[in-house]
Structure formats: structure tokens, C-alpha cells
Length: 322
Image: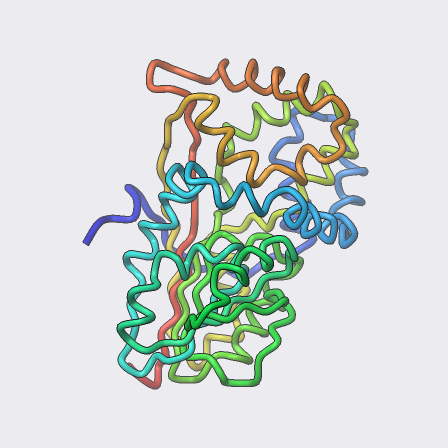
């Protein structure tokens, strides 16, 4: 079987509160803004309105970018494909839930498996633009249905799902604990879970270049707001956040890492699909892109500009089936 990545680490200790995790995300780049610790802590306490604007931005401008072949074939798209190739189904799997389904990438990739096994795919997505594209794709006699919803609000009955799949979406939630509890509510005791999400250190060096470019266009407060949008956790923290699964499921959280090289244009084709919340408040976006090119080329080499990926595979298997 094709290996997902090159290196991995396991899981273990208790979870910090979500606010503490977001504060730590600030502290990781404290050296860039050494005199703003108090503001960093205050801003880490809540950004609900910003998360809502993130969903809106994906609806308005990110949805079509997700369908770009380059987005699907480079970096995160390629990693998602490699992850999905290793997802296994059981004979009794009939209802498969994809949370944060976007425009339907998982269903596109696993369509043959759904048809051959007679499985029904249910997609949940909060961004209207994404939903519109997915619904158009699967409107005609398809085994796939998509609904508006999120990790924290899944519009399905208790214990109605045989398997949950999610790719590169869980990091957007406000609370991993709440998301885990809601997934546990809809998943059967005999079910399974395969989730692919970014880890704490994903793109650490790459993001330093982004912040350097942002500093020329945004205030400290604006930059810190974008920094708290994403849940950045270790395998240990993630495992603890899924406490609601521990009684009935064997839960394994592994971290993988890799370095992917590409030109500035290569990286921008995937980054623009995911960057709308990051650059929403920048007035002169053309100038920002020029500054970003300059900063990223500083970390480039003969191989290209590196992106240091780090991601988690959360795998849950029913103890009932073991």
C-alpha cells in the first residue's frame, strides 16, 4: 500500500482548553510582535464573527477555486488522494458521512467504491457556495446527498451513520470537544471514523513568510485574528479531545510530515483556494501578492519553495467489532 508520508508520531496527554491552544498559536510567533502579549491573550478568547465570515468567504470566492485541477493535484489535494486510497470500508457500511464535504472531493474520488458497494454518501457543508457546486454535481440519480451543516451541528439522527470521513476540515471548528461529541452522537457503535486534518506545526516556516508579508499591509490585531481561525493541536491534544469516543472505540491519532516543493505559482494555486480569510482585509491585494512572492522566494532553493506539511490521521474503530 502506498505510504501516506515519511515520518509519524503518536498520541497521549490531556487536552488544553481551546482558548489555551489558540493563545499558544499566538506565542509561537511572539518573536514577531514581542510587545503585544496582553492583546494576544484577549483575542484568543473568541472570534465567532470571524469564523462566520470565513464560511462566507469560502462561499463567495473559495468554492470555484477548490474545483481547480491544480488545487486537487498539488500539495493538500494530492495528500487527500493518498489518504483516501487507504480508507477501508466494512461489509456492513451503508451510510457514509463526509463532514466539511466542500464541493464533493471525497465523493469524486471514492465514487466507484460507493457504487460497487451500494453505499449512500451524505455530505455536510456550511458554505453555501460549496454546497451549490456539490448539489449540481450530484443532482441526477446519484448515491450522494449534501446538506447544510457543520461538525458542531450535524442534521442527522442519533446512531444513523456507519462511517465518518473528513478531509482537511476539522481544524476550522470552534471546539474540537463539541465536534467530537456531535460525531459520536450520529455514529453507530459498530461504526468507524477516518479523519484527515492539519496538525499544529503544518506550514510553520511557510507561514512565517506569509506573516512577514502581512505585516506590510495589516495591523497586529488583524494578523492575530486570522492566526486564531484554525485549531492547531498535537496528537495528544487531539486524542484527548475525542474523549467521548474512548469508551466504545479504539482511537488512534498519528501525525505525519513531509516537505513539498513548488514554484510560487504552484503554491499560489492551492493557497488562494484557502487564503480568503487571511487576505480579506488587505486593501491592495496585488501589492500584497508581490510582497508575498518576495518573502517566499527568500526561503526557496534549487528544489523550489518548500512547504513543511504536518497532518493528523484520526482513526476510530469500534470495540464491538474487535
